[in-house]
Length: 93
Image 1 (spheres, rainbow, N blue to C red):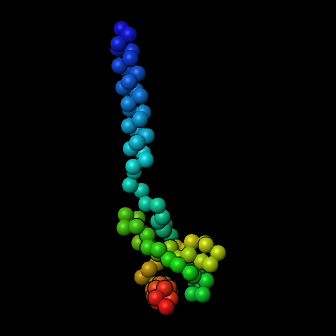
Image 2 (cartoon, rainbow, N blue to C red):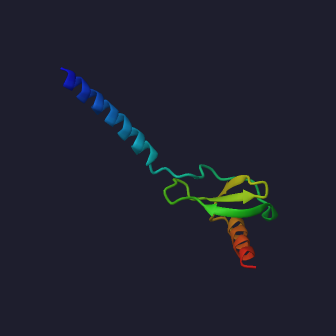
């Protein structure tokens, strides 16, 4: 009887540890855009950008302002494309 209780306790402990480990290894994007910023974005306010991960549901670019504020934008818009190219060119100067 005692060995059955110990076995049950070990099974419960193993299940708890396994579920915690699998939760830490989940494949969830760190940063995704769920909607785009709709207003015009002044190019001089943007200092950096990063593309969202490929497993995000909405393709996007995260623009970082001088005050370190992230803005989600559509990378297919011509203005956003020009902002990204401008940032890339300024890194090579």
